[in-house]
Length: 477
Image (cartoon, rainbow, N blue to C red; front, side, top):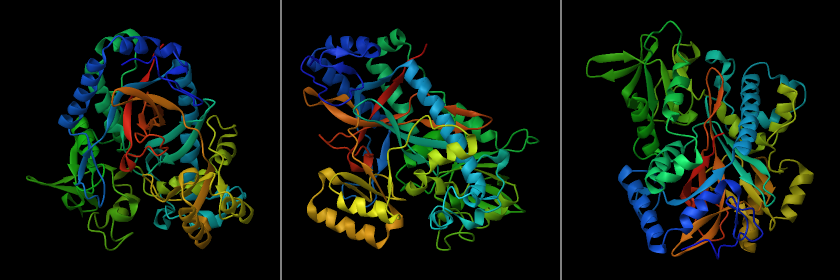
């Protein structure tokens, strides 16, 4: 099983420039794989998948008839990112997170960007992630987005674009760590030869970021990971990160507000909690402040949080920047708050709430990707080039009924990476989700989650829609 017959075609390929011409950073990997017999490579692929199963690297799909848990599909052909490319991405991501944090602080504070006419007030007020109870909040150090997963894609020319920002409860980093653990046993010699940057120190950086939120006078602050429970789609990750950081994994029923603090029920009585890494949506976290029907949260948490007696990561209210309509204004945020040009551009975006752009979208649904402003996981989306006339007509009615809730973007020819299909390599489309931590300063973890569309020809990389993952190798100097 060799790459001799693999043809990148008209797409940008992450490992090949043209047929039989590897990119310089991928040359050693290609030679190594070509030296293996078909049986040997397939055996390593199968062993990697078995290892993922034994590690318990699962995800849940709500309402799926096949069962609650699934193993995240994994392919042993990695994606490789050169030093210069990673330096570019790192600089652009730091700029973006800095501007987004200033934006969130502003709209829950003085709202200067609205008063100066950069973003319309009605867009903020109509954003489902804009939480009025958070107005006036002052999180520790003025930092709102402590953990971010930013989705990046490349077009057919190899140019990077930001597809979306995830600032509420971004998931997937556990698969980054588990993928690497498996790959070290699959291609052990190549790691030393290529000088691939490590990823297994992420839990240490994450814990440091969380501890940075606690008051300086506390010598041993208590940190917990708050999960909605075992039926959440990312429960594996919640338990994995808690275990890796050496902190407690708790559900809402394990916590109570007492004596003005959040406290954890233990066998020795109540114990104060200082920092909560929440993996729960805002609306469910405190039934007294948000959704009164929530059984998952902690009644009274919001008051303790507002009084500065507990820290949350991410801060409540950050979901406003997840809104795909607000996303379209990030270039203006960078210019407004930082006085800089954006380094990493957005995908060109049409806003359906603007009449002229709405008319264009409705007339070109067969060529565009249309997304709901607050959906995730590949849901609430129309890929026009792969849709039927009936689907487009149905989506058009949804857009007309609520134009504020939709954006549209051109269909990009996403970059591809060779992927094992039975006994040959096929080019499959990928995106990249690097993880950014904002503590004392902004840290971009090297690599990230490369998600791959494992259905032939598909552009949808989400695990709930049949996608899988690959290890991401960032080369060192």
